[in-house]
Image (cartoon, rainbow, N blue to C red; front, side, top):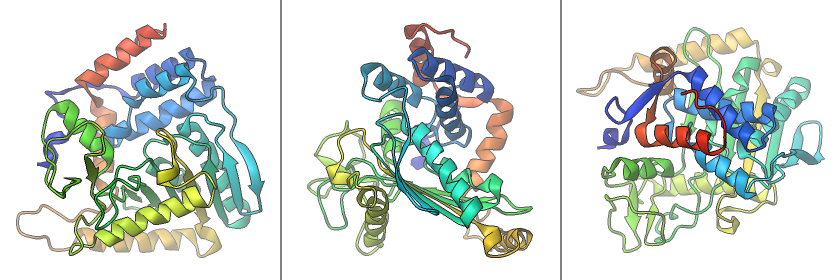
Length: 357
């Protein structure tokens, strides 16, 4: 059933990535976002849609720009260093656009890794950062391993629990390969990202059993608006299937992002707050980069060649579906759900900028 919540030609409109970037940047600039920050925010959102992570993609410009206009986000913003060492930094996002502060934070982590081999940044006073793997992927062009994670307000129950206590607390991890595609892991620590429930609701389709439970422990298949009567399941879902693992990973993210930064763990966050942690590792400080990539190719190639279960076409490695989506969408345009497509155009007119999509 999960495939039914995906975009297709009947419920979406194709738009070029270039036009989407231009439109989003124009909307951000129209609500007083500086051009360089508007371009960063647009780049992160369009990248998510290009990679098929539609829940964290271009449609987010509507809510972000409204948050800027209302003063919920502080714009123009300044990402400031609170404390730092050669390899670490604690930053304040200044209550600004999370996409921008996370991007600038990862730039700092990469610079530290270039100089010292490792860079780790924890960010507080922040907001939603979009597709979390984007920031891990920033390390790839520098022949580095990247890691990124972010907290969120509660939407997930702990293992054996019946109340929302943790965010979806996603994790991104990226490592470069040679001839093979780069390894890019982008995962929520819940059974499914919360945005997929929202997408199912907008498309009017049910969600599969196992994604969410009511507070009485009954499977939820008809997605409701956010309320306290249901919660997403931790990755693993049940005790027998390892729900403690997703629960533990969610806590790990809360510790590295919220407790380490002092910004607060999931239950302490106000709606819309997110704390973030970013890391970069210079592979060349450990071994020759070409040898590393060759071993990555060997590992990925062996996994791809694994015999499949009956009825399956082939074994995938993290990042494969997104890479395939990218190949299609850069050529044929990015599908934007029809309601969101209309909403973006309406938002452009509302803020007084040109419609270019």
